[in-house]
Length: 167
Image 1: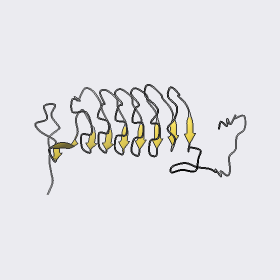
Image 2 (image 1 turned 60 degrees about the horizontal axis):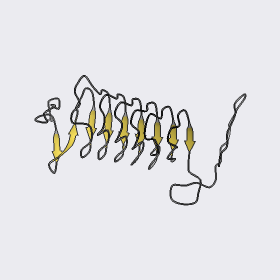
Image 3 (image 1 turned 135 degrees about the vertical axis):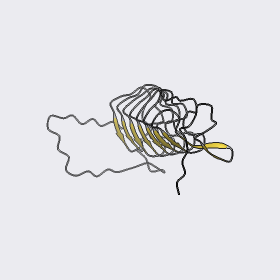
């Protein structure tokens, strides 16, 4: 058989699956999918945020009008309100981002230093720096958990392209 639920209502009286008395699955807004305890913003309407997907505790809970965001991992994209086209994969990825758009963050705490409108960044296992945009950061220097000491890359071709190295 099928489990058929109506669209999640703004008054939380229908279209919601709860777990332990807490919201667990809902689709507030339009074309959104929220899975995880307290994920998604329960005040969204069909005229506000659209085409968002989240899986994990409090993912996209602050969302108000942002669209096309994907959050996978507890607290990822937790604070985003109006940002759009962000992808956060892992616990705490882009956790503090508020209005930024077009960011991709993969790895625990990736992009977690973003707390405003940072946009168009690619973070892989790096927290980033507050206020930056249009930056690619791969890895974090060191020998501890989640850190790297060496990088091996073959086949990079860089005509008329500057490569910047900062330690």
